[in-house]
Amino acid sequence: MNLNSRHPLRLNVGFLLHESIGYSRTFDFDLPSVQVSGDLDVSHMQGELRLTRTAQGLYGQGQLRATTSLECVRCLAPFDQEISARLNDLFVHPPGASSEPLLAIPETAILDLSPLLREYFLLDVPLQPVCRPDCKGLCPECGNNLNEIVCSHPASDIDPRLAGLQSLLSKD
Ligand SMILES: [Zn+2]
Ligand SMILES: [Zn+2]
Image 1 (cartoon, protein in one colour):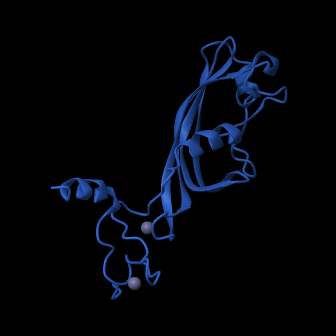
Image 2 (spheres, helix red, strand yellow):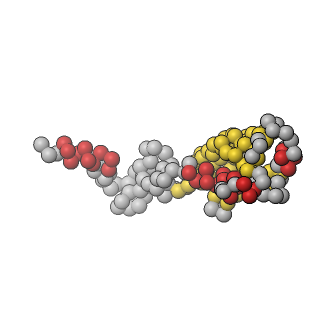
Image 3 (cartoon, rainbow, N blue to C red):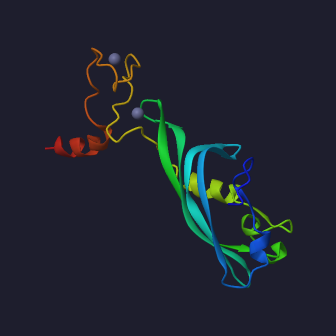
């Protein structure tokens, strides 16, 4: 409800601001694809956000999940990663009362969730994304994706995560 089809993350919350304290409304999201910001596109965004009128503004609680395309750090192939954003935030109205611009509801009463969702979604993106836990990466000799091709080059001797253990063992 109240979802603007062109800007689905912009909620018109004017009606909520006119309700009495304690009144709440849940916004459902089910978006095939949405540009959260210039640097973040997501697909299959689903979830809900409940906004409750408080003396200071609107308290938002909810969780949104989405899929974004990342590049695997081992094999460099693109893959879909699920990311989520959990909101427990007070959106302040009137906006001057907030020191945090992302949490201020402007005078227009259009609450744009994009900048806040961008923060939460990006926090949930792994620093070293891998397409799957056992990704074999690229062959250091020929550059083939070892998930797809078995090349003739010898496998690099040992899992780098075990290299420290190996050097301990070889001291004896
Ligand atoms: Zn990979
Ligand atoms: Zn190779």
